[in-house]
Structure formats: structure tokens, C-alpha cells
Length: 276
Length: 319
Image 1 (cartoon, each protein chain N blue to C red):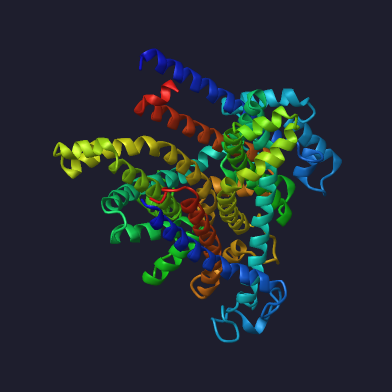
Image 2 (cartoon, rainbow over the protein chains, first blue to last red):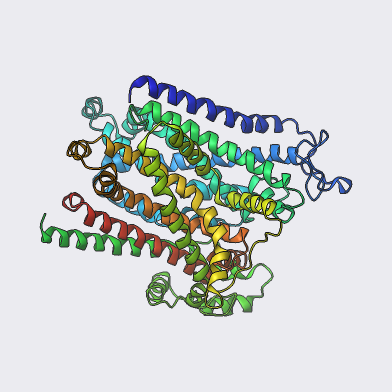
């Protein structure tokens, strides 16, 4: 496949991805300052209203405005995924970089623990962590960060293995630069091209997990809104009030799909010829 | 490639398997031992009396030193004796075995769907890459890949509900009571789990087949005048299968994780429900049992995938 086709493919992925993401991110940004209604305010006179000009996304079984709740849920979803990925990135740096740089016993022992953690189905590990430490938004962030750390550690390690062979690293080592400084200043910045797509995919996968956990009642706790919890609550009204299921689902899928498309664009444009 | 190398390879893999299993069991055990505070107190809640806590400590053997507890737990884990659930007051292994028909049946059904749908679609797509059929499949694949299985379940319920007015989520029936209804009750949840994985497997197979088609051995086969069908089944599929074994083992472990949540949407009494009740009741013996056995299944799946790929691709054994 030639370069031009790849660039246009990448552009298409970026455009669609950013378009979908911006829907969610704009909702998130606006919700910080303003929502049409108070997302927590119940209204007994306005239960299960279908979408209308007053309530564009309708109302739920407590008479809460679904648009306001969806906007507020976007805030938690974005926050949890970003915070979780940050923790996974930090833990990945702490384990993957030394594993790749020092090799030998350090590498073997770190990767053994890493691979063993990856043997547990991820969602199971996250659920158990939350079960042991209690269900709260911050515990979900920690649990997801821990569960995803091994995946990131692998990316760090693979990249470090390659870069540490370069002459400028040998040069720095011969000049007596300390390993920590080499890893953080000379290797880490060069890992960004590999880390960027992994980070974006990580955001999407974390959102998949978080929404599932919230659906089970072990994620974001009520009365705070999250897409997963909203869907769990609306399941009983799926026949009479389908809008309760449709709007949160759409927003959730927009966010995950947007992230996937952006990462796909990165993959196509960063790896030449990988566009099949 | 000699038989000796094969034997050595398998011995090395089995040693790796045992080491991984040991570490996985240690991690599972530690996860429930490093709980801040007194485990028995955490399990019983703040309202329990000191005597109740003491009784539970004795029952769980918490007064013994940590290494001793680990060894006895490990021995139990491999002989199917994981102790008693504090919530149900019965054997943990028996509780898990009772729930297996749901989770296992659903996983197998989902797996069959994945293979039965993704292979034909990938063959169709890779025939003329970039053409209409391929574009439709690829776009659908991208979208389905991004929808969480529990959301798909809800959407399926919504769609089936509006088409078939009398559609209700079937009640679960045990397989020994009525196998037909049992399968029926698992069909929709299995489909919801399978859809994103179909997308994933399709995407992988498609690019692997397109890659194969551009390779020299396929061009040679074509120049020998072999039919497209023969090239597909004799020269492309076997090679794609080797590389897809790893992907399929990943898919299988994802299916297990996905079924834990989807069971809840369809109200099925499987392992997921058991897990949730163990979590909400802080039933740690049951919880650690479920976690360990699910991890065990995953490790064995990866092991089987390694062995299978080495059998179908001799190059892997010499590495």
C-alpha cells in the first residue's frame, strides 16, 4: 500500500474519532459549569417523560433530566479513564523501564510478576480489588490503574530494549550518566510514539471496564451518574422508556469508538504500510 | 526438527506453566491476606461481637502463621477442597461446580458463534479488499468492537422486544431438565458476548489473509493453476490458523470475563452472580476460590494455545 492511501486513511480515522470524542468532551467541559437541570434533582411530576423540547433526552423514573445526567456522567467517565491511565503509565514506567534497561534478573522477576497478573481476567481483578477495599470512585481508579499497568509495562520494556542499543545511550553510559537519568531523560522521551496509541487504547479499555463495574454497582456510586449505572437503573423501564437506555449507550459508545478511531489513525500513520 | 526438540519444548512449557500457576495462587492468596485490618472483622462488619470474630478467625484458621495458611490453601486448591463459603455454609468447589453449566455453556456457545461468523466474513472480505462487502464488514467491525457486551445485551433486548412484541428474556432452565430451553436461554447472552469478539477475530483474520494472499507461495500456487477455493483452504487458512491461535486464546479468556457481567443483564444464575454475591457478602473463601479457578482456566488456555501453535508451526519449538 502506498503512502498517500495510508495518510488519507489515517486522516479519515482521526476526523471521525475526534468528531465522536468531541461530543463527549464538550458535554464534559460544559457540565463543569452548567447543566440544563440539576442532575440530582428529582421531580415527582415529571417521571419517565419522553424526549421533548423541555427535556431533550427525556426524564428517568425519579423525574431527573436525562440530558443533565448524561452530561454529568461524561465527567466521571472521562475523569476515571484519564486518572486510571495516568496511574498505569506511572506504574509502567517504574516497572517496564528498569526491566528493559537492566535485563537479566531484574527483567525476569518483574516480567514474571507482570505475566502472572495478566493471567487473571482483568475485569475480575478490578472487581476483587474494589470488593476488598470498598466500592468508590477512587478505588475504581486505583484498581484499573493496577490492572492495566502490566500492559503498559510491556510497551515500555519492548521500546527500552530497542533504544538502549543506540549509540547515544552507550555514549551517555560511558560518560558516567546514572541509569535513572538515562532512563528518564534519554529513553523515556523516545518511547512517546509507542506509548501514545497504547495510552489512547488504554483509555477506551478502561472505560469498557469502568462502565461494566458501574453497571454491576461496584463503580461510580449513586447518586452520582455514570453511563453504566444509568443503564442498570433503566433496564426495568426498557419497554416503556427506551430513551433511558439509548442516550447513555450512545454517549458511552461515542467515547470508546472515538478513542479507538484515534488510536487506529495513530497506528496507520505511525507504522508505515500497516494499513490493511 | 527432531522429536527431541519437541519433547524439550514441551518440558520447558510445562515447567513454565507450573511456575505461573504457583505465582498465580500466591497472588490470589496474598490479595485476600493483605486486607488492611483484621480479615475476620472486615468479613463480619462493624456490628459483630468480639466472640463472633474469634469464632470466624478459628474457622478460617487465621490464627496460624501466613506461610502455613498459604500451604494448606494451596493444597486445598489443587485437590478441589477450598473450604466452606461463609455465606452459603457449603463447599466452595461444589458451589462453583453448580454454576458452571451457565457460564461454561454460554462461553462455548459464544465461541462457536465467533468461529462460525468471523471466518466466513473474513474470507469474503479478503477476496476483494476495499470493495463494498469488505467496507461494510470493516466499518461494522469497528463499531461493534467498541460496544461493551452489557450495552449490546440491552440493545438486543430492546430490538427483539420491539420486533417480537411477546419477547421476554427466557427464564433459565438447567440442562438436565430441558436442554432445548437451556440452550435457548443462553442464545442471546452468548450472542451479546460474541459480537465484539467476532469483530476482533474478523479484523485479525482479514489482515492475516490479505497478507497471505500477497505472499510468494500463494502466487506460486496460483501459477500452478490451483482453484481459488483450493488455495484458500490449502494454502491460506492453515497459515492464518497458526497466527490466530494466540488471538483465539485471548478471545476465550475475554469471553469468560464478559460473561460475568452479561449474566447479570439476563438474570442468569452463573459464576458472575455467585461472584457478586460473594463480593457483597464479603465471602472471602468463595471469592478467592472463584478468582483462582478462573485464573487457572486462563493459564491453561494460554498453555494450550502455546502447545497448539508449536505443533502446527515447528519453527516456534526451536526458538
